[in-house]
Each structure stands twice: as structure tokens, then as C-alpha cells.
Length: 79
Image 1 (cartoon, rainbow, N blue to C red):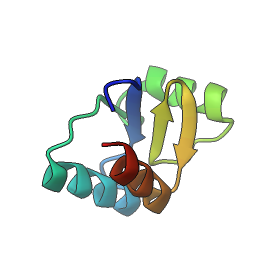
Image 2: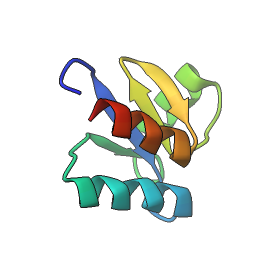
Image 3: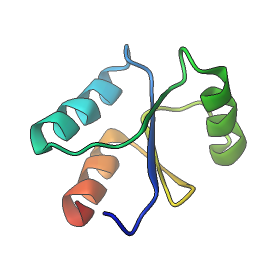
Image 4: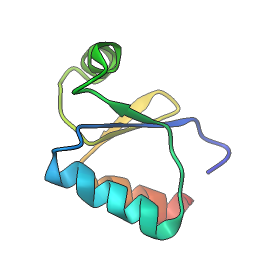
């Protein structure tokens, strides 16, 4: 995972975000978090790069990956 620049865009009240955050906690994985509900710049970045306001979204080297199951699967393979 150290070969990739990662950022996780979330909203703390989103159940799918909570699912990913719980997974990270269980695995001891630390990824910079950007909470779009309190960070307008993060929300603008999410929309400008990904074209939508959907969370959770894991930016992998600047490319968005959506869907909690897909994010967890990617982390399982790359963490």
C-alpha cells in the first residue's frame, strides 16, 4: 500500500462509510480521511474528480474508487 497515495472521502453519518471505517479500524490501516460534511474543499475535490458526491470514495493515486465492498476488496488485496 505504501506504493499508492490514498485518501478516503467519507461522511461520518453514512452507513457505508462506517462499514469501511470499521474495516480500517479492525485491520489497523490508517488512511487520510476527508469528511465532505465538514470540509467544503474535500466535497469540491470529490465532485470535480469523480463527477459525483458519492461516498465512501477511496482515491488511489488520484483516481476514485466507489462502493464500500469494492474499497474493502481493494484494501484486502493491496494492504
